[in-house]
Image 1 (cartoon, rainbow over the protein chains, first blue to last red):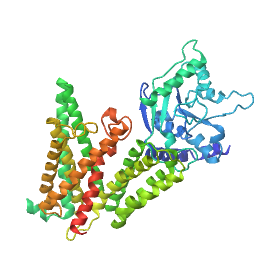
Image 2 (cartoon, rainbow over the protein chains, first blue to last red):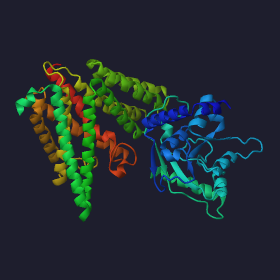
Image 3 (cartoon, rainbow over the protein chains, first blue to last red):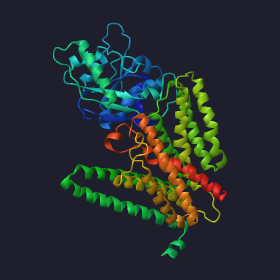
Image 4 (cartoon, one colour):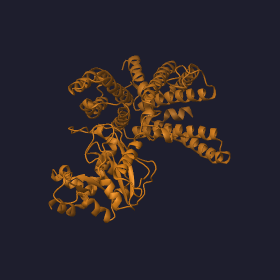
Length: 214
Length: 327
């Protein structure tokens, strides 16, 4: 509850910190957004991207134009992003993130927080691999994307490829290195009527990988 | 007219110079806008391509002039800081296209956040002896040590060479531009901006003439796999133009006309050949431009494309001046 009180007491602090962070990320990486196949448009969307670093979330947040940033909520792994008060504050007050549990907790549907967010009209950023990959290609996608697509057929599904972020701050390092990074947004895909779960997830993964060489 | 200009103070002379350059750029932009309005009528692809190229060239010129104007208007310290930022962005572009590995992370952190600021601090504090050897001698050893401690031998020589190269070009080379502003010539105070102007104008003219000559009379490319546009005839034409401009500009420098010719030629040779070397690096990485990935599509280039000739010309020019005049 303390972080919520913080947020409410100092909304300007989150704002100022957000702008500072944005400037910092742009100085280090350029945070370039490349729109190939879908314009930056304020419709309800699910952006799904490859995942190599915790900084992916910051990267895609910084690459979105301001109007979209305010209506788009990233997904943050609860165990990592609530570890310290600062991480908790930055995900709630600055990124307005939705927490998910990477491990299933009891009977609750792990997708429930995402469903709530989509029902209230927000756009989402998700990493369907579920965990950070270290290979050149993303791992197989988990079923969450399919379940959301099935449940919200009107939400536009936009693939995104995040390039170079793992070079900025490899696992275990503290100081980031300046390297140009970009987020490439591709043409939306949709769940075809009667499409199998596995087939759809593979198609979604291929759409993300295809953006690597655009 | 000449005596009127001579009687102005140093500051007024530099201001007049910038007014002149901005006037020429405004005129060129006006002409280009007029041409592009007319061009829309017939829409021949060759013409628009030509205009596009001129537009890119003009945008670079505006950018560089503005950088130099800010540098001069804000004073020596601000100029040094400004060029430190130019170095930072250039090095960022260089490192983006030079694949490094996990083990190089510490070395990269050192390069960006220690070596770069220290080099510019040495410039600002006028420790010219240390500043000329800091990167080629001390950093040359220090960076591979950090990479070796990263415990990853794969491609080690190549990785260390890339890092050293990036720092030499983007930090060491470029830091000589603000250093020019800090040289002390006896009886020639307050006009060091002219020296930077001289260098930039001479090198830029050489590159421009080389480009134009090759466009209208394409020579046989010397190294077609590296650059389709580098030919000896156009290169010599560029040098001649740069040298001639150097003589014309000798009045605003501490050089006699003969000295100005020699200095201009040295700067032009270093700058144009350096540009060729950078082209080879870009070809190796399979890109046409440094900078963000959309650059090659839109035709605009990265920062490093704009300053690479200067990165090579500045240190050679600086040392020639210091050595010849015994400063």
